[in-house]
Image 1 (tube, rainbow, N blue to C red):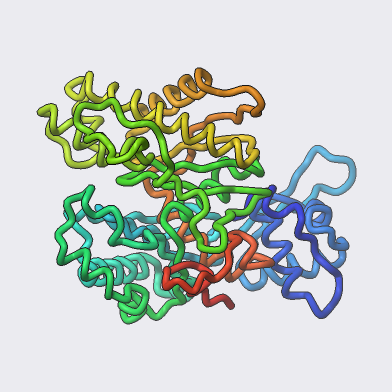
Image 2 (cartoon, helix red, strand yellow):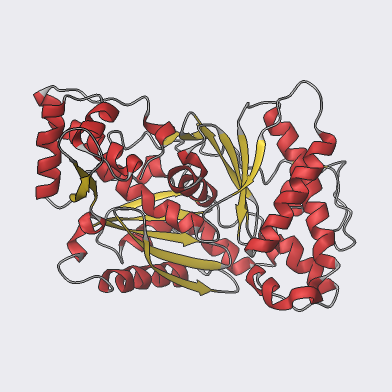
Length: 423
């Protein structure tokens, strides 16, 4: 459930007064290690073997940990191995997007048990809230009755402002105005009795990569997610840094040179913004304008060669813009890696990442250290999976605020710091 980079600075204490905290430290260590003996957990958590033995026995008793046989081949008695119990806890994650809603159910190990997806032309707020509530009930019902009480909460990843960039999608003004006055958090809470946790959708996707993907090995990286609109996240020292307004590494408004695509209108000023060059809506529009029928990115696999050469044109244009943004970003923040993920089919995403890497190498200036450019590991459901992590962290991490570093902005944005209801 947690990356090694996120947990190295958190150590336990043997004080009786912090027994519960120590239990969380041990759980975090076990989630990171996956499989470990009591002695290994004691070293990882910086607790005495006696304290860890007591804690592990208690966690096994309450169903959060289970033993997984013994490790043979060592001097002395074989060590009993322990692992997180998959059915120890469950969490639901929702991604409320501008084009689709994804809902996932994950177990205590982070395994996705069920996915529900619904696409819509435009996100009418009340209909989306009703749909989200229905999906939560469906996912609850998919568990055996005796396991449903182990769902610790519902995480929601969604754009801070659903009414932004609506012209690019042709969203009707009535829907745009409806979002301006609609209290989505309250509407969803009317459907759901479980604790709710909110975060920005790009931050949610970055969280999934941090906890279950590249973040297991990399402490510092910039995350970019190519979806309807591009977004991103900044991981520093194993934490998602969202900034005082929750808007760090947004990337969409980043200034880049104008697009070379014939279907993209010229910008009003000397610069374009990254969102209008490296987003999926630009790709689908470019294809449709060239008589390639497409509505969603996943249809690219079925189109095969029919999308060429227009797909290649977009990849080149997108890669050029992303390379510019990466150069600007690493001039400000020193990171080890750039992780690119999104809703593109895997082969096309890999082509895009390869093109970004090549273009970045061509424009990389002196005086900077080039980061690795890597493909993300989570894929299209990253935001929903990241959302599902939020309740698990609130319930079981030593510090529920350690995953997402932000301050309450007071701006009316729906974010984790405003709405988190931890145990």
